[in-house]
Image 1 (cartoon, rainbow, N blue to C red):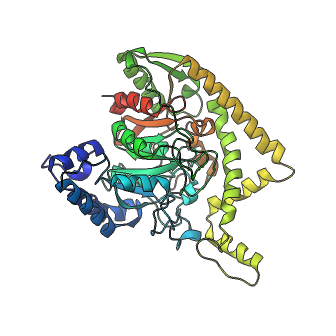
Image 2: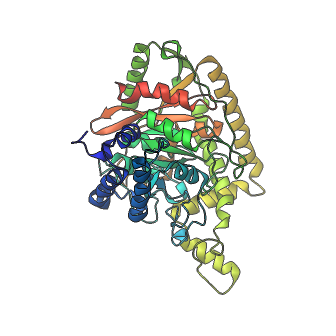
Image 3: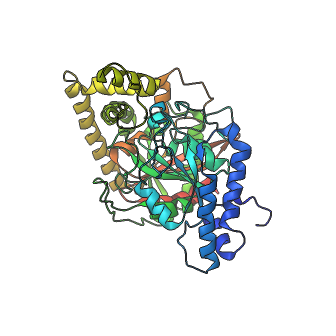
Length: 473
Ligand code: GLN
């Protein structure tokens, strides 16, 4: 281990090394900070870096280790946090101009839980403004590049979190996923990305985008690391009434596993590379003794238009709170109405305005029934269809994305093409089911991710299966 850059370690390896006295948490943290200094000008993963507080958090853990205290698994581990999750006393901008001077007044529940474990918060990462986007190009502040190919996007909206981990600037990171924002960047950056069951993790202190779909989860190098973070952050929280305690299932052994393969994954809109990797993953599963079952899941096709009705509708209501008076900066004008108008027109970016307008239209008196109500009915049908499928099979396999990471600038002027990146991920948000993206291989230098979807609270089972699929080795 002596010659290895400490930032390359997984959480499990680092936790072992810390306890064996091979290195300190300060050294581990410093190795991430060094990478940030050397690489982040190019990569652009971080919006803020907490050098001093991170090193003092690391020192506290080192002291406790020197006193031979038993410490939780994540003690002394450097973590990056998406900049839409509140850390007390630090700026939290959601990569939006309207919040550029907003400082968080409290810790999100997930932060409090990780703080109690002794985790080291290394900084806040870039995202698409208010988590709306699939490439991190919608940030008001900077573009983030994919460490595997800096000409390409890292995915989004948790692109900063994914790039930070892939570049060795942090050992793992937190993200949020409303329609794929953890899984798609994880796939593009060669990481494991977990979107937990809706309600498994408290959303208190997460800036709301679409409240019926939002979940906090992690981006890690391995499934094992993902499990450690999930165990640390899950659970009911009185501050989030949608959060609940789950009955976690361990699922079946690999040799008894039945994996559903939706026919839709070989159809229109899925690239030939993804189909090839889908087939390789199926072969690998069969080698491990699993049985694959072809299923028809039309919900996969219908989820995207439904998502793009429900998500903007909820976003337009949630973002009404940013009027310049309650949070962040106001553009003061002659009248209150004019102040709102000025603040919101200057404070929000193009994509966010597009969603607010779409959402307001969908919720308006003449259109509510035709769009919003109808989308909810369709969502119910998709939930039923997935529920039925998961009675026949233990889990569902799909590619995480329809294609490989695209070039920076390629899709910014074409919102519909950008929305199509979410084709395969949004159904897990509409159904609330847990879902994980696993890196299975590379196409040239670009990572490829496959997605597993399972029944409510099957996270640990999905991650166990995922650990057998990592890089198909
Ligand atoms: N890309 C999707 C969107 O733009 C999902 C975003 C997310 O999961 N936060 O809405």
